[in-house]
Each structure stands twice: as structure tokens, then as C-alpha cells.
Image 1 (tube, rainbow, N blue to C red):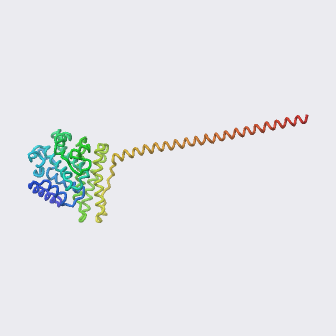
Image 2 (cartoon, rainbow, N blue to C red):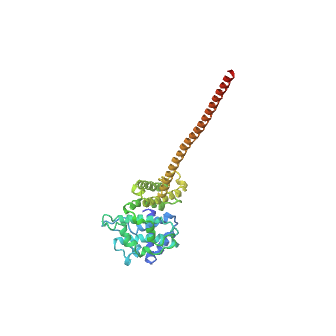
Image 3 (cartoon, rainbow, N blue to C red):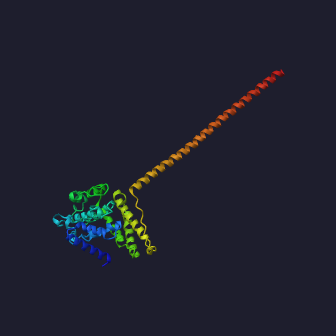
Length: 342
């Protein structure tokens, strides 16, 4: 058993003891304050904790598996999670509480990108049931059954622009997304979390980090080649969130001197939809500007030619008049000479 798994089991047991003391909020406080956090490290720690409370795989009977029931029972009616969706809802509420319920125990609550990660987890869990109970796999069914009730409507503080968990979900327009597509992000997110959880700048294991980074790179490339993801603003935002957090890890990793000889792979930069629109607008504007410039040059040339031809014509007329006057003068002189001779 790795040190990571030992630590997770210690955390789970500690959470159990806190729960037995009826101090659920203490669980979140301990998880978020007594282990030195970085932002995604904090996120991942909670997702790993929930995965060790409710498995991210179904049991042999095709049901959700509660590993440590007492961690989640407080979120279920009658303090007992008996129904299948109740188990998933308990996990979802646990995550929202961990990140947004109490600002004094979580100083990253204004970075609401974590909502995307919660939806990745939720979609994966619902998608597990797709072949067994089709209505359970529908995100809208889960929304109408649970998110649309009071627990998700409770007021949250100090999250700029959002008043409740439901508000966070609604304003992100997450209910219009397909769980089959969102769940594709789950493996990549888990691998990225392993990078953050395993990282230790004081005693680095460069080969291990490189292994996880290579795995993430392959999964990210697969997502980035999926037109159902890159062609949709909402899914593309999920991809960009993963990309940003991977790049942030690379910056941490690059500061470890002993790992300089083992650089992590560079993933293709995610292009935000607004950037694409801006680039397209710029190209159209540039194209229009280029056409306008060319037209101006052509017209200028024609104008210059016409101007020069006009001058040429004017001077040719002037020359013609001069020659005509000289001719008339010569004829007059000849006539005068003839008269004198006669």
C-alpha cells in the first residue's frame, strides 16, 4: 500500500470519528486547513475523500457502493442513504459544502471553476447507471429531483455573483450538457489530481510525475480531438480548465532542480471560444482592410493616370494652338510679301 493510500485511509478514519461526534463541518475544516494546500491540491483531496466514501464504480449487482456510509448519511433523509440517487446526491452535496458552504474554512471559494469538476464527478456517477436505469442517467432528472430542492437553494456567502449552489449550476448553464460527454473528462481529471496529490517538492519523484503527465497528455489529446467537445462552448470550457491546471502544475514542477532533466510534455493550448470569435473577427476585419487598401491603391493609380492624361491632353491642346497660331502668322507674312512684290 502506497503512502498516499495510507494517508487517505487515515483521513477517512479521522472523518468518521468527527462524524460520530456530530461535527460534519469539522471534517471539512480539518481536510482544508491541516494539510498545506495548493488550489487544485485542495480540490483533489476532497474528490479523493468522496471517492473513498462512495466508489466511482458500481458493485457486482450494478448498484452504487457506499464504502463509509457515515460520511454521507447526514445528507440523506432519515440519516440513511437507502435509494440509489440519494447516495450520489449525498456525495454531490458533500462536495458543494466542502468548497462553498463556509468561507472561513475555504479561501478558494471565489474560484468557481471547481463547479466544473463537481459536474465531471456527478456526470461520471450518473453515467455508470446508464445501462441499468436510463432515467437515472439523465442530468435533468437529477436536477429536478434534488438540485431543485431546498438544500441546493440555501444561501452561500462571499461567492461573488452567486447566491446558492443552484445559482452556481444555473448560471454556468451546466444542465444543458450531455453526461456522456462530460464523463469523458473524468479519467483525465483523476490523472491530473494524481499529479497534484503525489507531488512533493522536498522529496520529488520525477519519474512518477513524468508517468502521470504522459498519461494526462494522452487523455487530453484525445479530448482535444473530439469535435463534440471542442465544437461546444461549455465542454470546451471544461477542457480549458484542465489545460490551465496542468500548466499551473508544470510551473511548480519546473522549480524542482532535480527534475530539470525530465521535462513534462507540453499540451496544446486550449483556445477559449471568445478567443476564437475574436480571432475570426480580426481575420474578417484584416481581410476587409486588405481589400479596402488594395482598392484604394488601384483607384489611386487610376486617378493618377487620369490626372496625368488630363495634363497631357491640356498641354497637347496648348501645343496645337501654338502651332496653329504660328502657321497663321506665316501665312499672313507671306501674303504681305506678295502684296509688296506686286
